Length: 105
Image 1: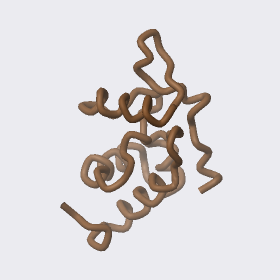
Image 2: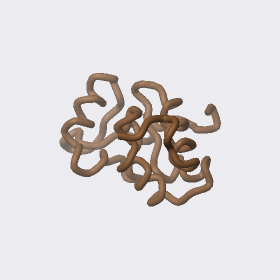
Image 3: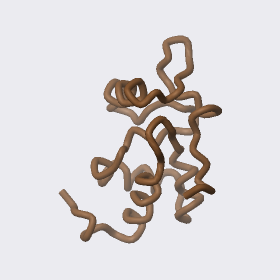
Image 4: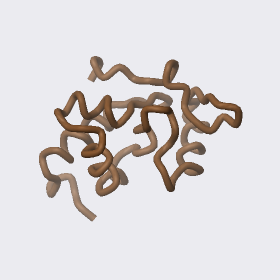
């Protein structure tokens, strides 16, 4: 596993942004991309490789759904942190209420 000292510049920038998102709040891959000058897919690639170094569950798809393959674990984190949920089964984050404005970063 990579350490913080081994990260490529883009990964370091992405993880720095994720580290600043407080408990109970979330951002999207696109939100981070706008801040670091990358596309949402590039942010997703960084998160898939290095996301375990940060609170990965706080980074979502634009529709508020948790990261694929980790939905159950992410939902457990959201409930623990009091992140507002939405959907008929409370299976996605209510972005309107939970989105963290990265202008505060």
